[in-house]
Length: 157
Length: 209
Image (cartoon, rainbow over all chains, first blue to last red; front, side):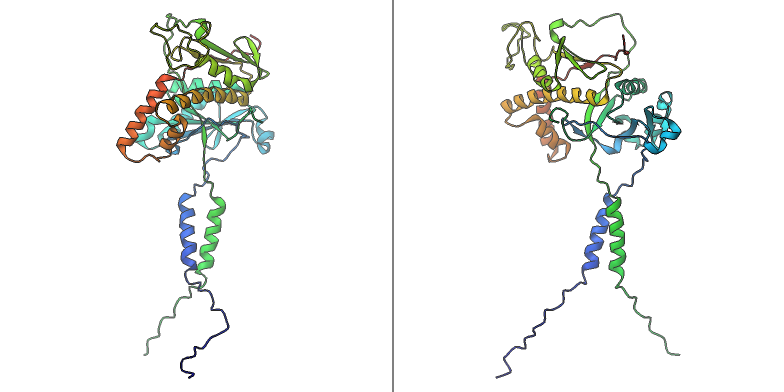
């Protein structure tokens, strides 16, 4: 009789956590691969203007130019006039050419001709400054530019 | 001498270490999604005496002053009306039927005082040096939107899909196969030819001039 009655335990079996490290490692590798550690330390205020008719930036062939007023912690030192930043330091308008040529050399050789200049300019900057940058770019024959924006639309606000 | 068995390494804390690393990368990750308005600058050419003649009626002048006010075709305009005005101008098709310049796909008012056809129509933006960048981008955005609207309309009519959506698909690599890509590229170019983006930018004037 008792041979067939199954012994039934009332306790729930513990959840098997043996595969937990595997799962965590999988996630870890995913994030390790997608992580791009910020290479540019932002020295200027950078509130981008809004636009919705946008295209995606191809990151492997682009060089960033930032422009705007110096961040608040640098204002004592550099004043509040808008400045241009390439890489990690402030650049003067006459120095752009040199800085950009240097930045171009860091790209892969086959992409150097397809270089795209991404302009990250603060919305409060004057257009005049952007024009100056564009003139320099024309001199350098880097004709592809992209104005980086944030999603949104100025009209509907 | 008896060999001591090597004790097993306790792997219980492995998960903790992995978690720690995971959290670090989670926090530092910024999945960047930079998007923007792409532009091709005109190449630098030696100045020529030759003047390209564009008829007044084929020119749509957008003037932005230092106080971020818009002057479109010598009339004050709000930013929200700019898109419609640009669409009306580009889509006008003023050339009379029978001439070589006649635009058979335009749906505009066919006003002979406005642009002949989209190929001839040029939008010229003039900025002041003190115009804010925010306004500059907003104007550019509206004008690109006008072109995109018209291109969408034509691609919908000819091929049954939207120009902007297919361009996006192509960018994101959703189109598979070389031949499909090329076929699509060709179609996209044919639409671009119907409404070529002719946005000219005058050198900004110095304030007060």
